[in-house]
Length: 142
Image 1 (cartoon, rainbow, N blue to C red):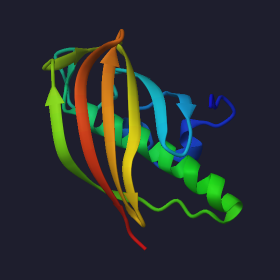
Image 2 (cartoon, rainbow, N blue to C red):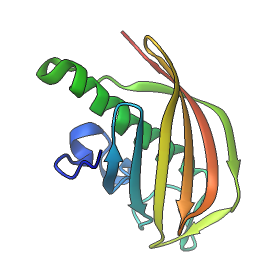
Image 3 (cartoon, rainbow, N blue to C red):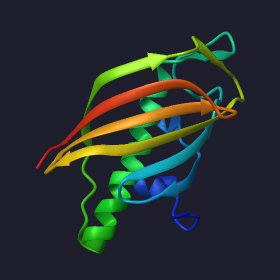
Image 4 (cartoon, rainbow, N blue to C red):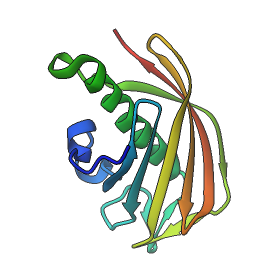
């Protein structure tokens, strides 16, 4: 489902330097697709590029968008958006750095869910070329 009527700020608590996702392309309760453009405000910026480690945060934020959207869908105005603890299960990077002003597309999918635990699989792409594959473990506190 395309979601143009909801903003990133509606679904993520991240602001300023830590808000990496610019746009929600698609979202539902199981997956999300977002876009971001590398800016001078991003963490890990050095000599006009950001380290590819930033892809982990892009996947985490994209997963947060999907999981928050699901919470709102299930609980409506009673939904309380609590943070998630994130563990990195696996991360493969196919480039070392991403140049300033590069547009990035991030896709993530909930692969496994049990109560407050989820496993996420995410890919990060530049111009349809996969630059990172990330698997995360998410745990939400009660």
